[in-house]
Amino acid sequence: MADKEYLTTSSGAPVSDNQHSLTAGNPGPTLLEDVHLIDKLAHFDRERIPERVVHAKGAGAHGYFEVTHDVAKWTKADFLSEVGKKTPLFIRFSTVGGEKGSADSARDPRGFAIKIYTNEGNYDIVGNNTPVFFIRDAIKFPDLIHTQKRNPQTNLKDANMYWDFFSLTPESLHQATILFSDRGTPKSYRHMDGFGSHTFKWINAAGEAFWIKYHFKADAGVENWTGPEAEHLAGTDPDYATRDLFNHLASGQTVTWTASVQIMPLADADTYRFDPFDVTKVWLHKDYPLIPFGRIVLDRNPSNYFAEVEQAAFAPTNIVPGIGFSPDKMLQGRIFSYPDTHRHRLGTNFDLLPINRPQVEVRSYARDGAMRSDENGGASVNYEPNSFGGPKAAKEFEHHPLEISGQTVRTGYRDESQDFVQPGLLYRLMTEAEKTRLIANLVGHLGKANREIQARQAGLCYKADPDYGTRLAQGLGIELPIEAAAAD
Image (cartoon, rainbow, N blue to C red):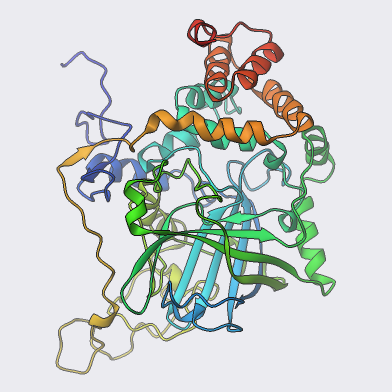
């Protein structure tokens, strides 16, 4: 094997599988002993200093979350415990792939990260303005983002990198279809929806659990730029969305979203037609309708951008009693990667920064570290167990158990053959004008890639809907792949 150019870890060990995380059974959860996954993510988290690796350019605002409907039968989370209860929050909006100086109007997903300062600690919902994502396993994330950044030789954005990865990753088609539709260029942060994207768990006071998905619908309505409008704005006012949000709040107005949740009984997860933990797929609303439970209100600008927006650190690890994780492999990877990148970018004590500090007393045995900005525990004991009255763990906050079984394996999600179903449904929901703009947007970007990659991507679109693939191929001036034409 000495002369074989196989993939290795950073220490030179051969890698057997670069597409699937090591999990405890199927679907998981992901195992910490997956040294390749940890090596890959940990290295990726440290590739940029000090700019965020992703979501580099953003804007933020303060406000509150207000409960509007009783959800106590589904969750015991205290901040959701009674109608009318208000809890302060901070939201950071962002583009994903571009650098800090990139245009707000770029065709890109938008980050929608919420930090809720509850009286049981911070609760972070780290989502996007889309309900799905390009990939469903965190082991692919560094590769995805590399293709969205710059060519390592030319330092230029590269359509071949971009579409080579997507055309070889069929699960990406759903998100790619959204991205190149009108929704890929939101008019402003006020005029886009937000989503938790992942599946999470709600647990009630009786210990019953439910799978859930978050939706935040913009009360101002969804508005988007067309592709040409977005490109024009990038050259004339690249900070438009940042300015729009700041000026809107500075004028005394508010920005609001209606918060709703889809709720799935745990037993449904094994039989639902789509794997409920696959973040490249949605739960159909006819199967699990939206249930309103609250609203988000933004009413105050930051007083200092660096202190509050640039140093804000969101992580899906920040949960509170009554809320838990799911075996979603992307979520499992983010549980490690987000706080890891914050420790790299901001230091081990990033949680002590005012914008990140919980608004309740923190009682832990963590001490020292760079940039420690408080009394560092004073004279109190720094170990446990101890005989000096130090804080103790409370059994009543034990996490809700998830039964797992099976061998440690690297495997995909069930029914991955259904990757083309939902992109097809989405395409057929579009109006004729929306389809025309989708194809034009794709042709404009995909047309910069080589013919082989164009044909491969058109073939994926054809599998979602023959009209989708045919129109894309015609727009590119290419023949559909033989296998796609044969299927017709």
